[in-house]
Amino acid sequence: MKAAIATLELPGTAMTATPSTTVTTTNWKTALPVMAGSTFTLRELRAEDAPSLLATLTTEEVSRFISPPPTTVEGFQRFIAWTHRERTAGNYACFAIVPQGMETAIGIFQVRSLDPGFNTAEWGFAMGSQYWGSGIFAEGARLVLDFAFDVIGAQRLEARAAVANGRGNGALRKIGAVQEGLLRRSFLRNGQHHDQVLWGILADDWRLQRVAQLPAVTH
Image 1 (tube, rainbow, N blue to C red):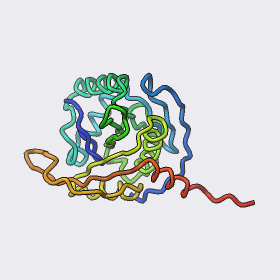
Image 2: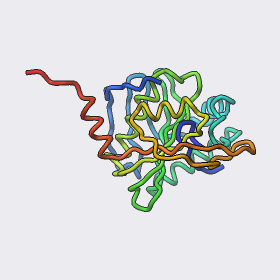
Image 3: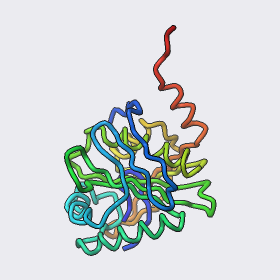
């Protein structure tokens, strides 16, 4: 499966948000932290998330720019089990997006190492279309970027989005990603090759941006 905003290979909006969040810090290879946004929680995927992920991530509008997701509850359960194994190995982290008042996931954020030391990583996102424009992406993306840079220790994050995916490219631009290149015919979907935009975010740039967004202190 690939993520809707930044596509990742796996088996089988105005973006202004203040970090009004709670982060429970753990050894992430043992268990992912629980990170609370204003209207949602990011946590580790659970087997019981499989039915809701099947319902939200396999619709045409969501799956249009991602590699084919699992088509059954069992397929998503296998994917969830795989995410746990890869997290334990220190290769990958996948957060479930759980809106306030719900118990199961309506989407995911994921971060995958591109080198043995997790210095460079690729990140991605997929969420049910009924939550597009809700602000969850903006705030959730900031939490995930903080996690990748401050907890995992990545120095560079890359994302890919199909050129035709205007919403995805706009979202990446608005959180501060830099367009670095065009990857021609790099994404195959339903027998058709698509060009992708390569986006990059550096840890130092992200921290400077974060400081710039802090409210001014008056004395």
